[in-house]
Image (cartoon, rainbow, N blue to C red; front, side):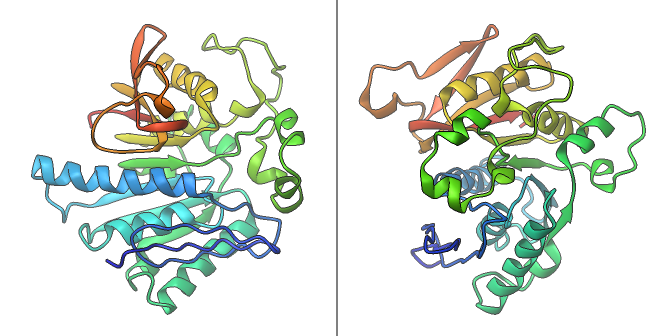
Length: 304
């Protein structure tokens, strides 16, 4: 692999660069589709390393199929990076990205074709990476049925990833002008919860938050498809604690942990040199915080 990954996600007058293992570019040339940021690249790369490390540590067969489902895929940055990171060593990989936006799906498919043409992705991505229209909330409702008709929900997926809209309408109004002008609300702000007002208590006992709308549904889907590892991006530690609480209260997951922006394999560390605990107690469960910086992803494990 080369020394740098450069995923350029273009929006008017303001491209975003990703850097890591090799060259990869993804394009979002208008404001109808949101872009993925370096923080997303950091935990996605870490996820790839963890998956490869797990294969080496446990002596697993690298030819065994690996199925990854990305919910709210946008322009496909997470699937493309995972395929580029894993496909050489896990040849039987399948990655599917789901998004509610037809424009996002169009751009994600274009990104696969473009990167293959530029030799940034192996040609196997043409058949191993695909994108489909889908509504997370509608899919999560279907999960409650005994029989699901959506093909995605009829398949077991080893890993579920998601960088969903997680900014509340109030917080979106206070974001920088560049974010408000160049990034669509659909990609950043989740839809309102029908029939539930902000601050009311859900059936799991949690007060609702406008930024958390999609997480229960994502966890429902992850449970339905028997995933072993779910990695959900969040905005900060406060939201990470809320999402971790939702996950723990399902009673499904063996363990829940939080990944910070700067990750490593040397164990939990305090954030930014401050005297912060390297673990939290949420709902009576200990949650380990890995790395340094802002909390960026909630990771749920089942038999993994």
